[in-house]
Image (cartoon, rainbow, N blue to C red; front, top):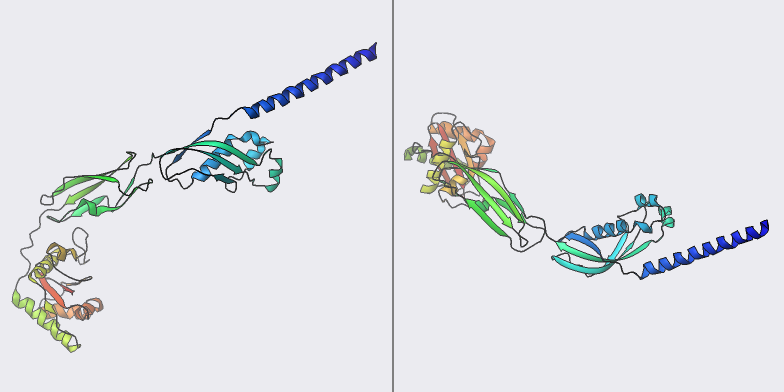
Length: 339
């Protein structure tokens, strides 16, 4: 009686196992026949890492392919490869494609534990543009002289956007009036075709009007300096300098006044001394060269100090320059040689 009961139990257990296997196989086949929805992936337009992003999303979405969960941490996302087509990341829009990812592991031995080393996935990629343009500004604070010409466009060093559009919409709000001293603000706004907006702002400080009418205009003194300089050039086998134009003489007079107490060769607003020529529409080629001195009392003393300074002396004997603007303001003398 005991043997018969054991036999019945064995038969029942075997049937149960067969039934479970059958059901398992049927379930597996059924799952394969179910059409999976495409995997949705969102990419930013012109994202150079788009292939890597798609690869990572597909791998992370298919962790059931790993035989052991701990292997997930050992996936080599960089060296895993992807094959995909029909995706244009240069334009916004929807794209359907098939992607195939071959998984690599950090430890090559772990690859033997993968249930499936290759994943093929239907993907629905949406290329979007949510990134604002980039406005690069030269300086956040701009210092201008009284009545200096101001163009807000000159302070933009670059304007770019991830869409790589040929033209972006740029709007500038400015109320700068350089004929009135004070602080002003300029706002830049840039838009791409997806209406992403970028804004940037600069502060513009306009200095008070400075009266330089007291700069030296004694023609005898200026001509005396010109004569002495040209005699010195003649001694060194160089052609004589021609005195600068009336505009150049005005500009150098301004520079002489600006340099009292500041011999840095920068103007009060920090700009290059040659902008004095620009302010008075002086024509010149290349870079003009400025020399300054407040040493000595007589014209001869001023020239003697210039000659004693190697840097200043080099400009007195400059080969390329043809003209010289000479001016003074109180005890400060200034000259600019140019061509």
